[in-house]
Amino acid sequence: MIKDMGLDAVIRESGAVVLGVSAGAINMAVRALDTKESPVPYPGLGLADVTVKPNFDPEHEGVLSALMRISAELPICAMEDDSAIFVTADEISAVGAAHRIERGVMGPFSPEKLNIPGKS
Image 1: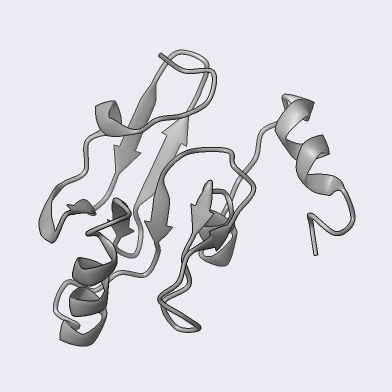
Image 2: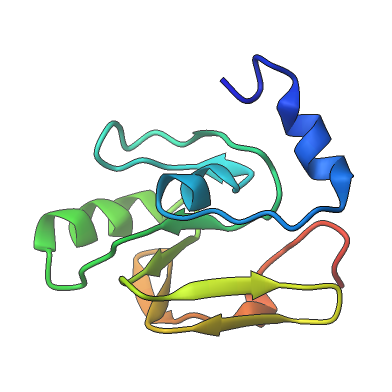
């Protein structure tokens, strides 16, 4: 709907603070993923090249198994409840429990591995 209304470009070019919670965080990525609907990524807003799985529970074997399979082609930031990623002009930081799942391996989240447009 955001893309259909032409708001995606406005959001990317505005310079405003953009906040995404749950589904909003999912849709901020270049490649968004909603594991409840489909294991196939879809185009997101493109604010960051990080695919987020919010409300992640590492004890939920079904979701973890699906993310491990998907991560063969798409790195995923699996964020437990009460975690967040902050991106400013100066730094990228995270709070709470966030995990990076890539090529079937889960490890700690690392802001240095994100590819965010306009950041080095």
